[in-house]
Amino acid sequence: MTPAARLQMAIEILEGLGATQQPLDRFLKQWFRSRRFAGSADRRAIGETVFAIQRSRARLAHRMGCESARALVVALAAEQGGDMTALFSGGYGPAPLSEAERAALARTPDALPDWVRGEYPPWLEDELKRAFGERLMAEMAAMQARAPVDLRVNTLKASRPDVLAALKADGFAVEPTPWSPVGIRIPREHRAGAERRSPGDQNKFEGSAALAKSALFAGGAFEFQDEAAQIASLLAGARPGMAVLDLAAGAGGKALAMAAAMQDRGRILAFDDRPERLAPLAERAARAGADVIAMAARRDGWDKDLFDLVFLDAPCSGTGTWRRQPELRWRLTPERLADLTRIQDRLLDEAARHTRPGGMILYATCSVLPVENQDRIAAFLARQPRFVRVNLMENWQAVPPPGLAGDFRASPARTGTDGFFAAGLGRS
Image 1 (spheres, rainbow, N blue to C red):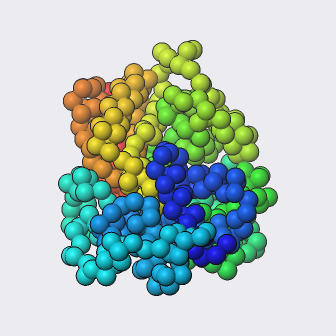
Image 2: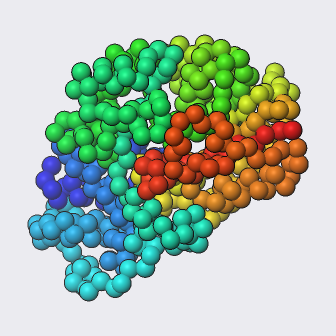
Image 3: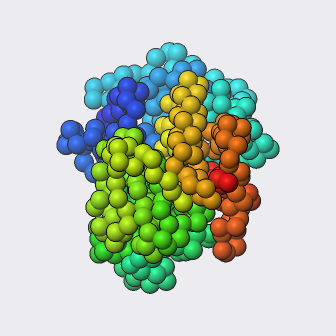
């Protein structure tokens, strides 16, 4: 494909993306699956363009005075110094530039407001300032960077030193994570394949695909999991013999981490309102040797059970994952955020019903917004007088990571991880 044809396909992808809620990387994979004429180099270049636009959408739209897919591609191509006449000439490429587009490119840019510099929706500004205060711009700059790949060593099968040594022997550039004692990181500057990335996804290195096909992964020695999620799983304080409920388990990453902390002794029930999310867990648990995990697709049969620990990784805005899923910045609406806080309150109350006296709820989100985090905890405690806050520092055995005090607040600039929140709620 010519560079112009690649830009035209990027425009079409951006237009299609606006009509779906699929994650961008998954949407790209499906898009290219039905367009086999795009070779690997084309897919990589087009994916790079689409991800770059999602990361810089506010700035590009501000320059053009328009946020259409075409306007965003025009602005990015101009920023990258391309031959605009050749790139926008019609045929298999985009149509020639209009007079309005040429005028927008020639205009002296206005001073950028904070929300444009920070690449976030303007309606979220007050809430992000609540979260970060004077650190807002630094945090938003970190949110625009690419994320590393983090692995969690499965201590049921292996030790971190042994996995590190084996991966290095296989040619992977890996290092221990700074805070999680079971974490391994592939820094973003170490991309396998001479700086080549997986088609359409700037966040997942080709090394990730190779890792997923490795004998170590097949043998259950590690799972892919961001360090912040590893820390939250450890802060839950799961121990051998406990009865644990993973109330919004998804694909089961936290359940697997807790099974390892419990030395595969006790009971973990993984439940999710959408049973299809649990589908990968059976295979993952078998690979990990985690026999203590059972799955429930319905509430029947355990709806009156009480647990020592209820882990609630609640559905949320995903603002903490903007490095990996930049499209989420532009999909979130005030209405969706309000819906999410209602869901979070409902699930917290359900978690309370399943917590035995002396037990604990670990509430977690991959959000940085106080309205989903501290505000939900305060509202819960006002509704549930039998519960009190737990100091999570008591469940941490090593040097505490930044952001860990009574609760845990992670962010890319502060901890070098995804944005994450965790708080403990003990029942008297």
